[in-house]
Length: 319
Image (cartoon, rainbow, N blue to C red):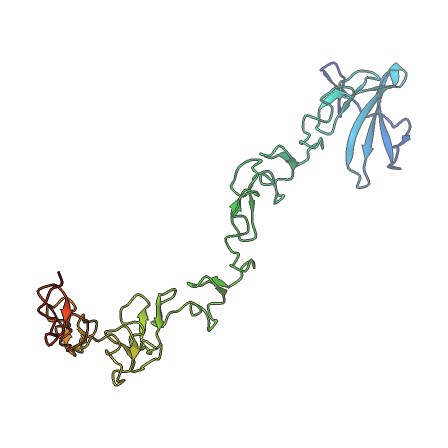
């Protein structure tokens, strides 16, 4: 016994009858010829058409009711109907907007595996860029930060872009460094931190070696203390009390400004009497007579005249 579905939701058993004929049809593009098995009972006969692939697997079935002039029934049981089973297994009109779409992925491929990621792009979930291509290095969706050559995640207009690993010479991942003297050098250089060392070994220090060989600050009172007044290191000259730069053994040392008493800068002077006296002394030029002669004999008489006392007129006053 065979069982047959009759499109009216009832099942009727049929006795297996003799095969009347074999129908053939050609599937377009597949070049596959599928047989049509014909069953009959009394005045009713139906042919079931089966589509098969190269492996013989049945992919679709259609039924011809020979009592109805050989008309085909679609998947919904409508004679010569427009419905077909789509790739999703749904029986739909081919013009239906959901035809082949109920199981389609985001790319429109029925039973496809692509999905729309967080960035809104239709991709395979296994794609390394899935959910990642629209996120910047800071994890911000459609952010603008990028990773610089130093590995820092920064905005492209950030002043620090590509600088955090750039040395003082501008070389990316270079090894030069700015030393304490402001020089851009390799730390292994013999001049590193040396070009600005003072005599005490202090970078940028103020001490200098003076002309006496002493390492001192230039403001130190002892700086160049061995240099004499003539500018000679370890020289013997000195400034005397008269302001002259002379060797202390020089006969003129402290003499060029000495007074008659030998006092440098003194005020005494030798008067015309040969006395070393202060010019303001009452005894200064005490031997000078009224005529201005040192050790002269003239004197002022009572008449107010300067005359030698031995002069006969000394005591006479003209009328």
